[in-house]
Amino acid sequence: MRTTRVARIDEDLPVMGQGTWHMGELPERRTQEADALRLGVELGMTLIDTAEYYAAGRAELVVSDALRDIRPQVFLVDKIFPHHPTLESTRRAARAALRRTGAGYFDLLLIHWPTPLFRVHLMALSMIYAEGVARYIGVSNFDETWLARAAPGLPSDTPVAANQLPYSLADRRLDQGFLDELRARGILVLAYSPLGRGSLLRGRRLAVLSGVGREVGATPSQVALAWAVRHPGVVAIPKAVAPAHVRENAAAGDLVLTPAQLARLDEAFPPGGRPYQPDLPSWHAVFRWAYQWEERRMRHNLPVR
Ligand SMILES: NC(=O)c1ccc[n+]([C@@H]2O[C@H](COP(=O)([O-])OP(=O)(O)OC[C@H]3O[C@@H](n4cnc5c(N)ncnc54)[C@H](OP(=O)(O)O)[C@@H]3O)[C@@H](O)[C@H]2O)c1
Image (cartoon, rainbow, N blue to C red; front, side):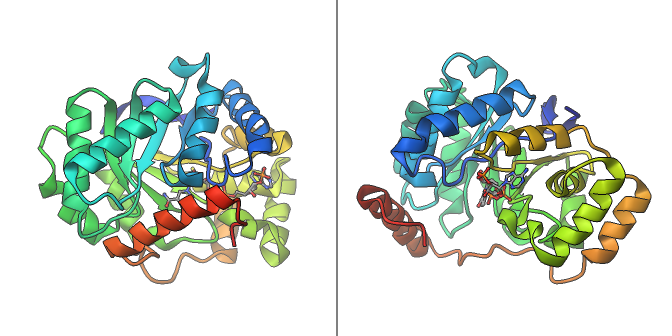
């Protein structure tokens, strides 16, 4: 597994990590999901990403199962949802998230989305950092404007160390300059939905990825993942439960595409389009409603959509 390092997180990280969105939704799948994460760690995908929001805390319970005797090997990333209205409720939420993971400390703790209360959320994170409960802190879904506002909200000794953002051949909005800016500032980019939630693996897109894959002896998913981490300072966090997917994703962490292959992918998936902006409205009320809905969905076991 290749590794990468950024100025604001001074340690080697695997270029391929593991996501957990939609894990923990069905009790009967919990063991299978935890086993998938453990297999991934064994294969070198030692960075695990989870969130308070995912299955209203139940994904963190899956992570807790996965971590049981391998905690020191894992770089754990968790995200606090931005529906908490005060400093104290945000800190309480982080403590509850930590209890669910059973991890003892967070390696990296992020605020999941920007809202008008982002200063309160970032201040809570910086207090958690100062207490030694999070080794690093950062943000998710913050575009250039939100990130510029975030910096003055934080004490100078707790810089934003990472930004988790959508990045794949299906979504190249970061290629409008923001990715380069983050890398130049030494901020880790955690590329989420690196397989475009499966959308890259259908139709014409699949045909292009298969073509490149045949040349390098790799699957279409591996080509897509290798593309996402072609620059230093980027870690992709594909989510996989199927053991075959986990193995494929881990092996993609060793794959390096040639300039000619990258040029073909550029041609098939051109970087144009508008620069990245968060997809969700940044109103605090929307996130409060979203979290209540997620809790209700879990309580009554309702389908996702
Ligand atoms: N910060 C945010 O707002 C945010 C938003 C979205 C996602 N994320 C994070 O990013 C993670 C990844 O994103 P995502 O879950 O949206 O999408 P994704 O990783 O792009 O796609 C996940 C889907 O791809 C399948 N898959 C995985 N590996 C595969 C392979 N090698 N071949 C074929 N199919 C494969 C998975 O199937 P199986 O599970 O059946 O194996 C799953 O259905 C999330 O889990 C979450 O941790 C963060």
